[in-house]
Length: 284
Image (cartoon, rainbow, N blue to C red; front, side, top):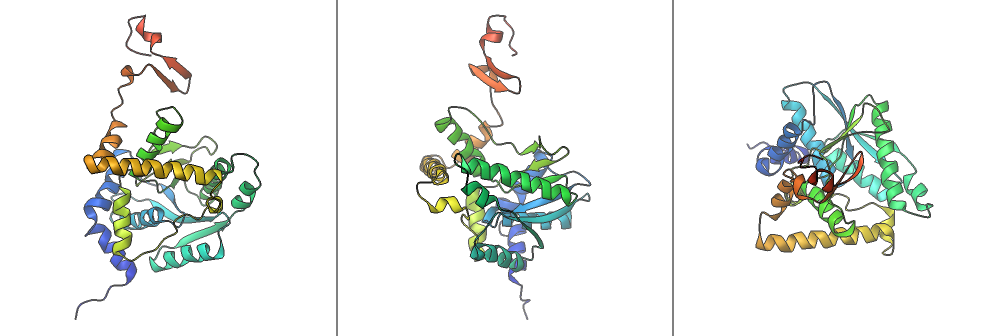
């Protein structure tokens, strides 16, 4: 008689078998290429309730079984003021997928709701701060967020189109306000469409967007989301002509020819190519 697998077991098997090339391999590639995990790390795997962070949690569970060096993971859920239905959805999905989540509550939605200006920026800053603080309290030295390859390239294109700057999204960052803490993005090389395929294959339904502000079409968050949708649609249309457009943009971020740009910014401020052009030096 054939063995009957539980939903969480089927989801795990699909990661390392059916979607190994699309999910497991690029996950491992990012961990190794960007040196995201080191021996002795204790990582807070931050779960928002969406498809990306839930998959990331399952990938970490799989990695813990096969890792060549010891590290720990805590599956951390921050409730910023979710509706009872959204909170229940996160908890039920975590139970379904056998993810032992640690949940803590904050009043971020309420605080951002009373902000007169830039509520989305305030919400994002507060979320990051609360996650760092809770992770640190739990003895972690890193937090892992579920940004994928499409987040990386869409953020870059959005910055160019709407902020007049070439700005990427780093695979890892050191925290300025929490010494010794780092942020890592293990899904950095994973395509969103492959995450969607995995979720559909396993008949999983996750939170789409639990942000309170997107309920109002005139909210700043809705404006940002509409711009991101524009970029998604643009890349999708370009992909019809060039199937490798996503990887081309992504690879371009790893091969930036600084000497061909008339200006750049770094921690010291703004620089012009004239700083080295007239001196004959090729370095800023």
